[in-house]
Length: 170
Image (cartoon, rainbow, N blue to C red; front, side, top):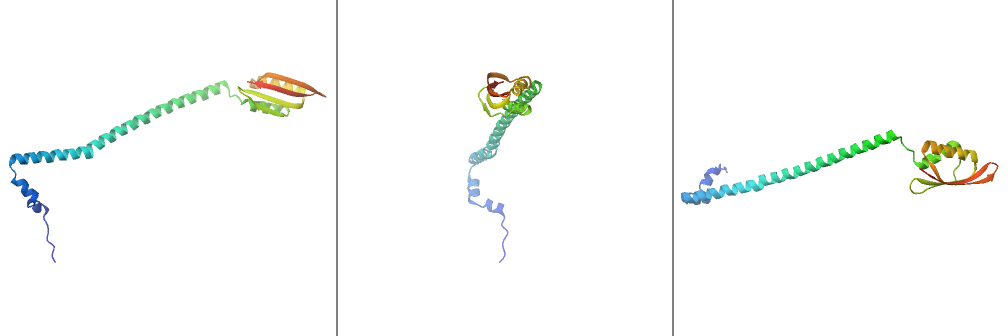
């Protein structure tokens, strides 16, 4: 069986639509052509132009939002760098509890109780400690860490030993 070559253009010329179109008068053909061109342009607009313009508007908004985010991040970075710079210029302050415990261990004092309170205030209690060591500790807290005494109770325990209760603040 031999397959015949089919010419698509020849078939179109003899198709019903083609015969129908050729039978129409000139004005009817012009209207049909105008409708076909209008329909083609409508599909071109709906299928290509509108999606591209919507995508472009969406991407433009996304770009603007990304740019606003970048400006905000740069502003926050500037503020953070400024804070770090100010902290370095002012000298970094050790947290109050860390200052109290490290200074006490340097002087040789054993703290029995440390209780943080509000607004940089800490309650401290200790028993049977050397009175002179406590005075040295309080003096170094004031000079090195700017920690002051808010309330102080010292009770003698005998042999130069004392019990201490106090509130320290920065």
